[in-house]
Image (tube, rainbow, N blue to C red; front, side, top):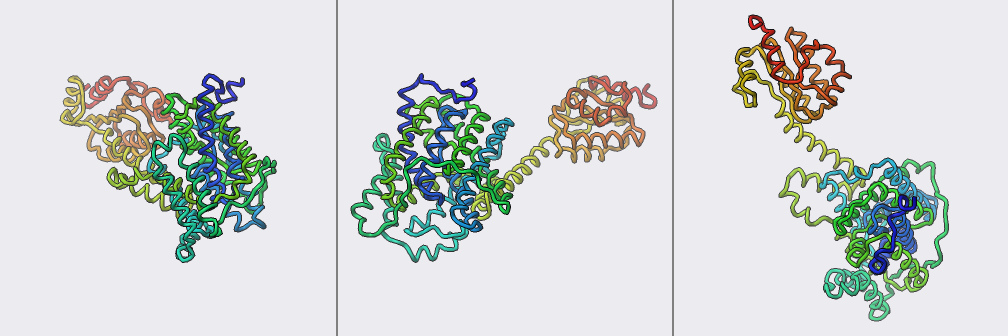
Length: 554
């Protein structure tokens, strides 16, 4: 039973898992601080989010090497949730409590996705949409850090508020804080590979930036992390507002779906590195439980983190024990070193967050999208614009809708070519010698109406068009022997074609109707309209019957 519930935890790779967990914890510390401050929930919420989510997801998830914690995309959405509630709540404390409740609801959504076995469908969306909203999230994260990066408070009003405040931000630049943020970015960007093997750039930037603030920049009054308690977080019941309930549910659905996508995409990365296969539905349940617990203790939501997961695997982690070790180490650091955190400059954390935002942007695809397809480029850039300027759910909804419509249109065009009417042997259709002779004998009085492949709803127009083009004939043979799927709309179009042919006195024959196609046509009661002798299993028999039934051919 424990093997079913728990995440394949074992001690077969103890040394590698311990080292992987330690390394992942080192990277998690600066990231958790940066995301906690960036979101507005505070450093403690980010740190405890990294601990709680990492521990619970490692225990109950479905990807042994996955490292879960607050991530850039989740931070962006959670930040917008906090901002929206801050504008309407009675106090900042109530706004935070409602935001954490949204995190709990998001976790419940994720658990439901897993229980209903929707894991394999979560990431089944066009890459143009995934690239667009991920890049949009990266841009939002960079924009929201402009204030702290320039040495000022983050403007109110989210992205739009920040864009409107850019002139004021440029006028109020604090040179020393900007310099410190730039130094942080430089360390993250230009740390030599040899140094990266010994010390992660994020930790190096955090340590160097803090030391510079305490020494060379000590007299400039740099803003630092507000002091926070090192104690264990306390349990808090979810807070709901009847006025905001609808918004909370929508925000939770967005946050939960994004967490699912974020985690499962990272699980795919982990699979490729370890040559294993994760359990996507179990992973969603584990992620959901993690976010529920995190929200109940006033900590940030999170998901599978690509950077932490890759570092864990590269450092030797192979089982869920590495994630448990990472959570325990991080918890000890939080409890023991929290007082030191108040000396960390906000400009350094802003630099770290900006680098994360830049890395989230899908530069590789954005540079090539317009070369691959104009439609792909339009969808990608459109989703980016909607994500940044409107909201994530609108961006994803419109992006998926447009991409699917274009795909269906393309598929329908391709499938429509497999809807053919044949009355002579001159047509580009493979018929055996006897079938050709029968059509020649009929002299255009017998029409072969051939369908092949999956007949989706977009093909219905082609069926109607081909049928309307039928000239003067006495019999129609509908050949469905190569139809792999007959959609409802296509079935209705076929029914209309059969009814119209019969109404003008034509003999109708149906060939190769079987399986799901036969089941659908019987439910439509279409086959009941035809004599049993007009339903054949092969095309040759149907053509013989059709030709023999012509006047003077019997």
